[in-house]
Image (cartoon, rainbow, N blue to C red; front, side):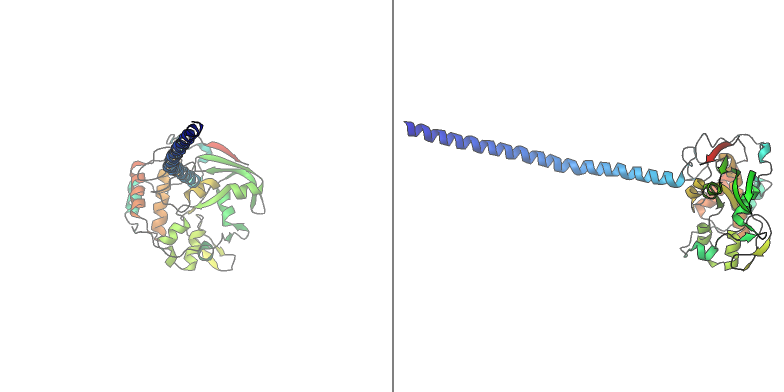
Length: 317
């Protein structure tokens, strides 16, 4: 009797153990299956969101303040509503002599007629080396670099030391703001000189085939018909198309080498003048534009008008 009970207990115990092991394995396998199927989905979703966040961050880094307000047309980046208020057609007294606000055309009709003569072509894949092909800013008037000369044209209450600015206030038309700098390092890092039609864009639209002299002429065209000597002792004779403008460094970096179909100044009241300057420079130098940029320029000129709001202020620390 005792042995039968022991055998029964043994068999029962074995059965219970087997059932328990099977159940545990099944439960563990189910959990693993759920985890293995859910985890990649979760990971993919997170990666997708992270990628989107990174892309948005990169776009924000490149486009910066040019986000938020509706572009005039095309795929132009959006601008901050607060900074982009168009204002009125009357230019503030403090900006009456601001060279960046001078429109090269007296009417929309004249600007559109000039645009019609600008060549439309896709960007080439020509090699581009800024330092070798376009050089650094030249020296004019004996001591001034082109950079500092451009700064001098829009400087307000500025101090310079032998042609280098140590402090002052400058107007940035791209964002309709006063830029205040104290110390030459802040002036050097906070304010950049932008080519209205970027050098890389120029290179891909005809500039690569220009002579070295013409490329350096474009790179240094500061709106004065002036002859002199470059740093390498080569001569120059710069045209008077006012290619260069002093702006907040962040705006210059945001713009990069993009055309008007991809990037526009956050200051909506300046976009009409900006488009007119693009047309004047493109026609004057024989620079082609893409179809998208041509259409954007046409729309900006047809629908736009110069408008001025009270500039904001920014101190570059």
